[in-house]
Image 1 (tube, rainbow, N blue to C red):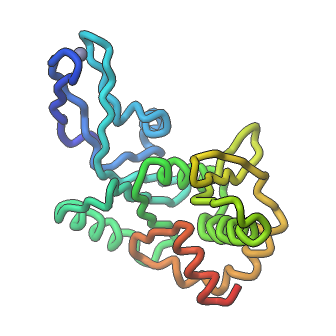
Image 2 (tube, helix red, strand yellow):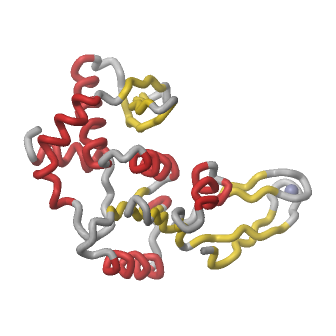
Length: 215
Ligand SMILES: [Zn+2]
């Protein structure tokens, strides 16, 4: 639901306009909004006079009722008291349910999180896989400086794309056997990490978890 309009001034020609700002996006009730999140249309204003596009970023809650998922998009870690109150209320609402509550800090992470849950994967196990693969790559190919890894889906296949220090990318298919092994190995151990607060489940979380459980 759009709660307010953001006033935008075109940096090219000075024309002004409004972009609706959403506090929460319920993609089950409004599937069109999901597409607008995925193609960034929700965050893009196009100048009606000169065609210049302006990209904005603001915190909102992504809510998928079907997948029982809430992702709090919190760009740049900015969080105001209103946001915090809203998240706390949402946490309380879903306490004791099997809802997944996640926080992401940038648009890339948001798209990846949506992709992972759309593939019906467990994002914690996926992050553990990524951390293991990055660790193995660092051992076998110390010349590669892998900075991060992202899940990507092409032609119904799930890939892990590794991005190095120069932003060069190479990808491998997510190994089923690794996913299944870590799922079995780690599931009981990490079950209690899925609590009733919004959590950041990223590669840093996975690296900490691997080391905590000596995996
Ligand atoms: Zn313009």
